[in-house]
Image (cartoon, rainbow, N blue to C red):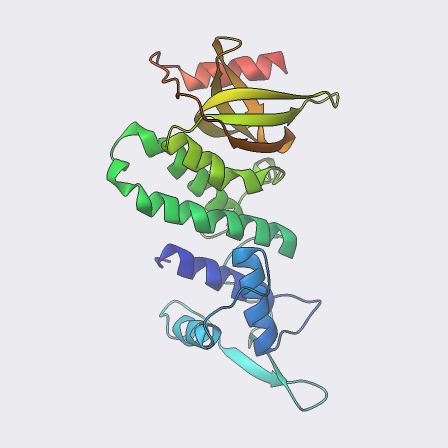
Length: 252
């Protein structure tokens, strides 16, 4: 399916609601769920007719194989929406709503960043961003690829992605509050360089002046981070990221 990216996210949210076996969603609830998934808060307003327009567009899409039906609720006062074929799904995923919300609310600003910086699309600067988006879309089920068990990576730390991406593109140094695997906490000033999914975890690669080397920080162990007002240190050396991450694997 080829939809405008953020439109596709709305369709994924509706598909999740229409196939939810635990709850029957009224129009108002669909609107709230869409706001919550896209913005992390159900109070964020969606355009009044957005859900109706999306339902209309989905049903007119030529590869859509069922109908979206308005069914009366038991009280007879409201209606809920669902597929005529109860086994139908537009997108393959087995996400909880919290997982869906986390991915959608992360992808939305990443799509905006990608559009904003598309002037770099033919250079290496955005390679990592396109890789992030592709991995998230695969997990969301919008690429047509069914993720295998090994690809069900952790979503912990995912909320950091959009701001870390902007820091890399804008060459913004950061002060990171980090917690190690043994719960030791420390702060470090670093110069973000790259983000990569490796062994089902997200990693930030950054140059650390105090250690004078490139280091990695797993996103699920980043507690907080903020901008650091120091000159950005550009990394002149080209690293073989494949070999670098192989070394991480060997180190455990």
